[in-house]
Image (cartoon, helix red, strand yellow):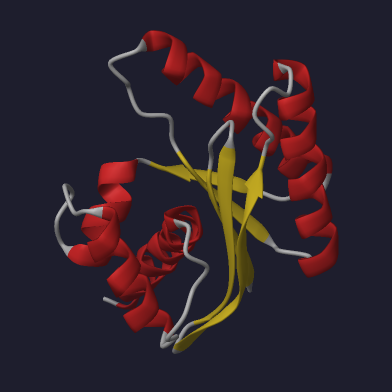
Length: 164
């Protein structure tokens, strides 16, 4: 099952694709969708929609996992992030992909055992779990892969519960 993980952001959105099998998970691809500084707001949203659509068309994921919006100290920042998430979710639904959401703290806890883990700790665990030695330098890619891997952990856990 090909899973697309997304770490949403208005100016920088990370994406990561993995191939999940019950006893093996493999890295497929990852990257960052960037919006140019100075681009107007509607065009930024449309760019996110188009670019994630191109990723979906190319890799044909069966599931999209996206990080939930967190409450930021600045309500405007949370609102803008919500709009970015909306554009990405609509793109996924346009291609009939089921979408699941996880909170950032849940993702960190699933991968590192600590809901307050740093981005570096998350990146380290992503690389260990996927057995890869190099990722793009932006943390958005490893965060997106972490979101996808969180769902893999959930599916394995659910499978174990069903066996007992």
